Amino acid sequence: MFESLSESLTKALDRLTARGRLTEVNIREGMREVRRALLEADVHYKVVKDFIDRVTEKAVGDEVIKSIRPGQQIVKIVKDELVQLLGPGRIPLAKSPSGPTVILVAGLQGSGKTTTCAKLAKMLDRKGGQPLLVAADTQRPAAVEQLKVLGEQIGVPVYSEPGGRPPRICERAVRQAKETDRDYVILDTAGRLHIDERLMAEVKEIADRVEPHEVLLVCDAMTGQDAVQSAKEFDAQLSLTGVILTKMDGDARGGAALSVRAVTGKVIRYIGTGEKAAALEEFHAEGMASRILGMGDVVSLVEKAQSAIDVEEATRLRDRLLADTLNMEDFRAQLRQLRKLGSLKDWLGLVPGLGSQLKGMDFDEKEIWKFEAIINSMTPRERRQPDVLNPSRRARIASGSGTQVVEVNRLVKEFKHMKKMLKGMRKSGALESMMGPGALKGMGKKKAKKSKLRRW
Image (cartoon, rainbow, N blue to C red; front, side, top):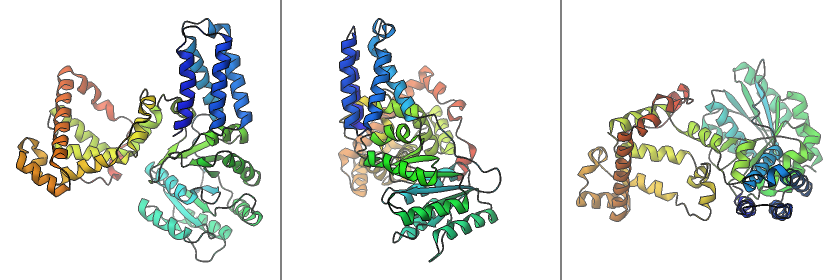
């Protein structure tokens, strides 16, 4: 996410922080590099000009230049201005005081709108809501069927009508939601071009009929300035309450994220970070600014972990760690939890201090699957007592898992190394302080009950 922009910005700022003393000339040279990085990322030219002017004005002050670490001061100014540019902090969805909360989702063709509707429903369901998806996209072939499939995958009902007009479909769907006590209604409207007058009139009619509490526009972050222009056009018709940027895990240069709020005044509410149903994150301006500068994003990291980790399983693991009874079954369970977090490189990039160190590193996600396949090929006794894994057993496991003996050996070696490291932490008391009862605070009980993770 933002790899090219992050690399360009951090290089420019690193040159400033490497200098012992800074002058106004140095700072203005550095800001020219920052300006170039932002323009190359397809940030709106007026946004870039205003941003550079504000940073430069603050950076050339005597208080900064004469400070002990002027370079670090400038990095802080840049980060603060990025936070200001990206918008306010997290804004929760509106909640209807009576009846279901209606969320109208609009977007251009191909922006990932239908998938985003399912992701939003999954997020609300995970938080204890009772969402209803509405298939109101009658323009795109198979759009209704796609939403039904997605709804079945995430366990959320889908309302649809064959051959109906979208405004009437949405109206009746809201009525059914009231009758069935659903507390959220997500309207998946047809993708359209902002110049398509007929379809724009149709989505406006939907809004007039159902009076949605939220009107969210889905924009493809990879389209850069086109996404910003689309937001302006849709807002003129629908009065948007927010924007969802999709495909942020692709080669998004950052222009849309950094421009959409400044140009349109509309806040970014969520970002799509992958294809999986759980790959939708609440947008945090400060966390995103930190990511762009390679500083990680602790808040998003915690939210990812809380959404993926089963509390019951985590409690069991904690007890086994403290009792020194960890085995291969526990290791396999943790590999599965790790896989649910999504891309290994993406979530490691959220760890403060690691983002800048991951550039250019290759992460083979298949290794996690390979390790799990090896553990699956073990007998229950071998998983629970790894010490019995002699050469002949390892050869059988390699054959059964479609791997090489050297890979089985590597897994066993990694497991033993981990146990040795944990033993040292246990002796020093560090493990107990990290894994005490408070370590699981914030992961509600409902998550444990709803988890579909199999017990082995």
